[in-house]
Image (cartoon, rainbow, N blue to C red; front, side, top):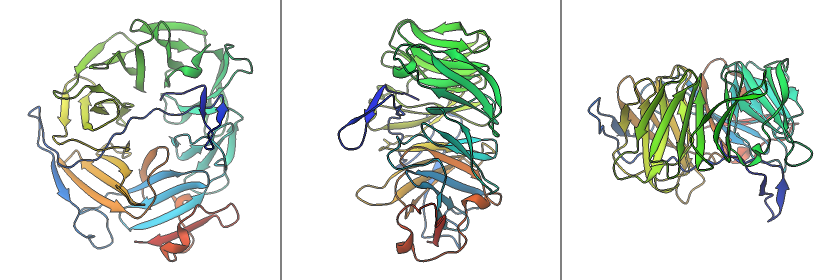
Length: 390
């Protein structure tokens, strides 16, 4: 994720030391077909609704969208229920920071990081840090605190869901203008010399990728780092052990232009290829072989976030519907090579998207359902949650 030393404060001002995710639009399919001969992805236009379901077949999934500054929006795709839930740590005036799923908790916040267990119960403070970043282990998270003096080292710690510190130290001088992502035992970030892989225990750089400031890290999964240089026409998937797979941008696209998102088993990478954040295509890459799994055939239009289902069998993309306060969601089933699209009556995601297993998320449920008109704004801490069926 890209970060920046100064960010828009919403009123034309800037917020010192804030960090904003750079995520070029990953948009929604108009049609999908294979270009590499592996399989054909057929896109099925959403019929009205299928019983209580959004899509033709059950998904077993609840989509979670950032509803900053109040909390989160949870959409149960198999029951057509929307819940807006207040989450401690989401505050008025905060920079919108992507939601994280750490173990069985949703992690939120900026300049104070909180964890909300999906099973319910009280949120708890993980640390008084500036930002949180996903770690290579799914039950851990990195906390990064800005240095008081620009140019000094940041305070970095890796903690578990309870906030227990696993690793702690200082490092990453000048990281404010870098893209940062977690690797085993450390972090990957941009530097004037290239992409730096930094180990916290030794507080040393263990590897450098690329040559110069045009190298950027786009994402990590396990011990793999996705990065590129300059116009990003060639994507590198590099293992910390030394392997490197190089993937060329699909024909007709200028370059890869979004974060790279790994599947839960780290075998697949989803990324957008387009024209510097404009129209483009969603690409699925086999991280083991470096081969394209499939590429959407038609041009995609933007502003979407992507998330894998916990099993890795489904990939979701969510983006604003044009000229509407609605969100378009495309779902790709890897097992059947089918894609469907639906329009949901909720505001578009402001920062990030999660897909969690349905049936084990009481923290994301409203105690009762009412009219949708009564649930158009984030609830305050006192009301807790509101919900409606659509």
